[in-house]
Image (cartoon, rainbow, N blue to C red; front, side, top):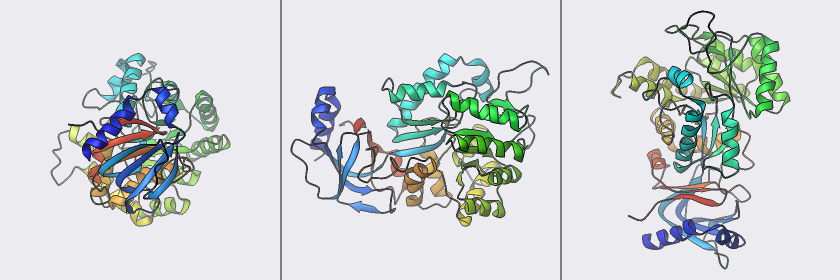
Length: 427
């Protein structure tokens, strides 16, 4: 069976544009061991999926292959929606390779863009067919160009939603540590006051931002604890301007007060949330504001500082785990996003494994990375589930990821918009 499977996949991969166009009327029939549809959280053994053009046209057991259709047998694999990365920075690479400051100050825009192209491809081939990029960290509006290049088929990568430069309070971000008064390039756009905030939001939307990213709190100086940086009035002004333009707002907030202001202002997602309290998470749940816990960021930075993974974990790791537990207890919707860029692109599943280890059931993690992230990103009418009418963004992984979420690391097959972009080669 394996030989037949690989022969079918190889034929599809080698087919040129003309062959693909000829196959479009009858489509591609995918025959995995089971389907995880992202809708009900269950495995469906024996289900199959028929794709025609860029969309799913049928899902269920024992589908009949139309005359002339390609049949792809995925022995032993689970077919599921293409995974969605909820918090990434394609223009960053792991901090143990180059520090954040040095990436912002010393790496050229051309180098950072070339690296982002490679990192986008690695992400797609890891089974993440969509991604929310939450700030270029000093690379300006280059994410808008990368998104266009992917959409136009110039380079391979996931479907992108981009936040361009992100917005911070004047003096509250970085890089820091230079002669006072020297104009040093910053990792985000600085504002002071509601009027400047509105102007920055509109400027970024005009340049191509799909999301507005704010920093509600940060460290005023290196070594200090995070403190609120944007006022409630500034965050409210940003939310009003963004929502008027039909753009959602994501907020970096690691303190209880920063989170409180973001919640009161009516933001759409909160990133990190390490300082959340039961009352804060209850307020988030009441407004259905999603949390991206970014456990992998705390895990990665702690390992860069020498932690070997043995318990007891460092304080930052413990805080991230505890905030997730409090959020789950309060009923907060969970966004799956690891702050990838802090660690290697293509290893996006690291966050999923850590979410499961911290208390989420594997099926809940899978739902967060598919239908959940599609919902928070406003794409649920197109993505996030295996059902007729949606875009055929599909991945196959070895085994049963509802039993062991580590299975999502073993990606055997990736389809984006009905086109096979990655497949397991015969050994």
